[in-house]
Length: 106
Image 1 (cartoon, rainbow, N blue to C red):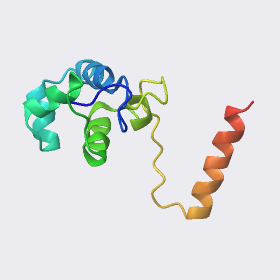
Image 2: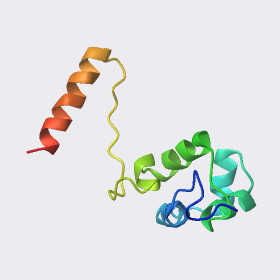
Image 3: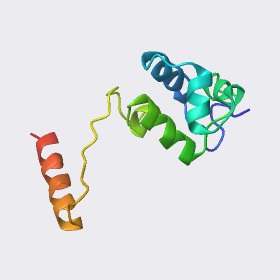
Image 4: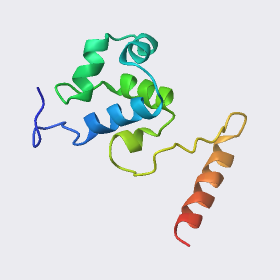
């Protein structure tokens, strides 16, 4: 079991995972099946006994419709604002990122 202060521990992740699942109105079984884990593993994440791997965390964020930064406690915005950048060049994506950064500092 990971504990606060232990290297790699992400405080609050357990609560945000459970809240996000409840907000999405999904059961542990439903989520676990979509991610490819057992419901008991998901329960361990939600009570803080274990923490998910990066691929599992990304899958959970996608299922719950939130940003990984929200789950990690780096952002308090619940709903993810995901932009579809498919079809854009790397230069265009960098330009969009720059515009977002400028708007954040206004």
